[in-house]
Length: 636
Image (cartoon, rainbow, N blue to C red; front, top):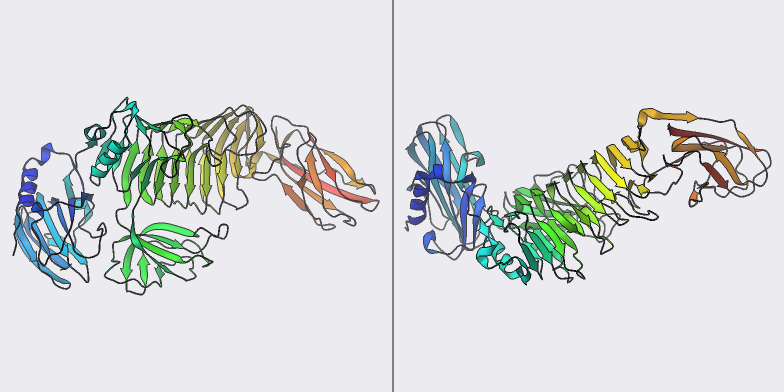
């Protein structure tokens, strides 16, 4: 049988100088494609891709047959003594420690386990794991046992490797003078950067791009304050940087109504194709608000596959009706995760229409920090988990109907936006969440709005059944009245902590804001007062009847009519001429509450303009009809 030594000797040399090297968690890997009946000499082959992965697992393979892996790194042992290593695989595998083979499970075979032992001192030792897959089943489990350690899969926590070298875009010909097109050079640098490594831009340079950049692997980006200058309006090339996990070609679909808490699904996928540990993109049901979109989409891992039932590591959070779309599951071949993207500036050539500055899709555990410049959508984040956007600031430009946003989120879990600043001259949403975004937090956001005119938009737009959104320590410096938040036609659930508005307020959900500070006054739940004036007798022609309001900010009003004969509907309008708003049908003797609510234009809800009156318009009512009413307000 073949015995390769080059990479093992390389590991020993690294071990000897390890104190001088930068190390990271995980193992260095090479992935190879080829047809073998035993392990090849990987040192003579060219890897199809390489980088750092958390452990020896097969989930980052590109194909399901005729491939091999070569993992190298270090294992740290707590105690001196005899250690047993186990390689269970289909097909062949080997384990070497400090350059010497300990386990030989080579050859083309079905799943079986071999073991070997070696005396080792406490501390760090080099480890090499090799594997190849021919056809049929594909499995690999690497375990160990030693003093005080029962037999178990080697944990990620004891594995490290030499950090891959950073890749500078200048070494691939990127000039950065703002006039030379650098798209091809930077894309070549991206393609050459190993998984887990860092792509570096050069400080002070401006890179002109006539095509957006695509990153489809887990690599970091260190911008060093350099600027990406986009010069194209052609979709999708007008997404300046598109960060996305690649999907395998086969998409498996099935129909099944899903209930909350479910983790297993009745989909037929061969056990040779989808194996435990694989990362997958799952989409379930049909969004009741948008028939072209799924109800639930998630990046998750396969924990079991029987060939007819697939189990994932995440529970569905709510009941899902199948609808018109099929459920689907697709393997991710190289998930974008555990990376940082930072210190990048953005701008675009006049006449160009960027669709988004940074688009992040099907990613998890990503930190985006210190982005600056001019943005259309600074960060568009879809189908992702645990993404943090922090320390970003810039000017928003609304070049498209969906532009002018700092962050836009869709089907996300655990999105966090912290300590960001947006300068906005447009009537647009700064943070826009839609379609079942879950558990978003927004803290320390400052919005400087210089928009002049009638505000029809809102600072925050939470819609599409998004839920669990919380915003706190929000500061809005505005030159015209603002709507704080809108939930659109598709409801969402959210709440606010402290919101400071240094300007006029057109609408705000005071019942959902713990502390609204505006005009030097703090309004919160404890400050509400309810008054109930004496009932009013209304004549037979009730039209433009006015009720004076309190000197404060209205939360809600409740009305009761003694008779509704002749009443088809009731409208309310503010004394300053604000638009009509339908209260709706009343039932005689039954109170009806009209609450100021998210997104609707209630000009009377304005701390800067108290003492307004409300006018009512309706049809003819019987003489002697009485109106009983009360108002709950925040006393100014």
